[in-house]
Image (cartoon, rainbow, N blue to C red; front, top):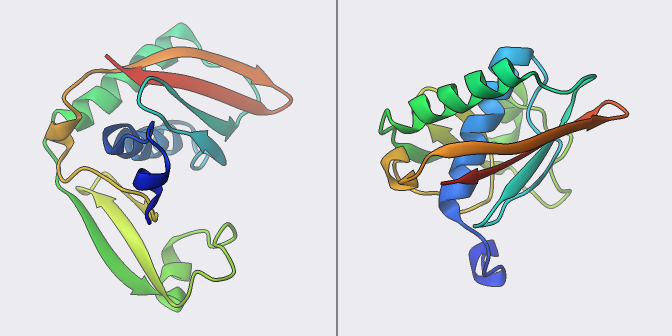
Length: 150
């Protein structure tokens, strides 16, 4: 049974949008991907290692970039690579011990790629909504970003 079947609030559109957000955050701020995330249909959150809160201008820029990428109708594809090859491109520190040697990589066009076991849409056109940051907060080097699709 996959995660989607276990969690009635799971939404592949939000999960794929999280991938785009993570790549945007890393490209803009060099903060890496979220180290913790909670993704659901109504609203979601991502936690980043960050020493301050975002400015209103930064929030608007992130929203615009994520929405721009969504509107590009990028294909979302899965590929597989062995553990040794994946180690050249990805941080493997969060892999479970039983991950095996054949790892799944999710690619959102040429914009994002990461190791992932979740369920995704096939094309960003399926998001069908606008990405909106609801709020942000920062405490002890952790910046929490809450978002939804409207």
